[in-house]
Length: 302
Image (cartoon, rainbow, N blue to C red; front, side, top):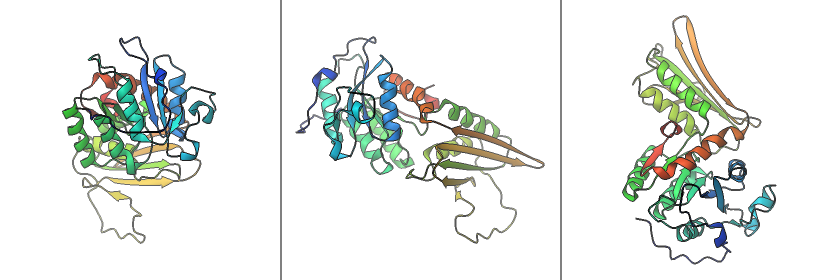
């Protein structure tokens, strides 16, 4: 059950932004955490471009900008939504002002923050009865299992989505299909040099889908000697190796390479602009309120 909100907070909350939701024709109330980040600001722009969603909260840890209009801060012009650095108080406000009327009309949190707080943010959102849609990667398998149990107990739809790109889902499905025919495979992911976790959650998710088809890869044919530790990438229990590259100029890129006698089979996905993720984000926000448990991966929503 959602927790009772007894938090005292000193920032202004415009209750007009929390409309009483009584039918599917009303916009979905959405809070965005990491609102000043590259992904967070892109989400706000996408929400603002559709009448199906209404931004009701913007959260970011840049306290010096707290109280300013988020729209003005990201170049959209005033949106009548102020920026807050208090994550829990923002959830509290959403929990209080969006009624749980049995029509599945609760608020949704979209979170693009940092791996160190992603687990806590997800659990806190569930506790307040706000549907979390988490795009932040770096949540461990054990944490996902814990969140799944917590979400199911609360009967609250929640989503952890390593990658919101439809193209990436298609790559993952193709890689899983290919794994039935190839015993040797390695994965490489490339991101901008401000990404905190490695390998990426998307790459890990891809490896997991491949491993569902085959449990062992890359039987060693020689005694390898790494002259520099890590040169051969991160080694999973299945034998799959994952490689990470971080450079300015990159956005998000992934390659899965399979090898066999006389041939290689390569699957590649390149994200050129973060707007590619927005259709997936909006789809998950729209659908997650019809779930009563945690969903891991965009393919479970499509």
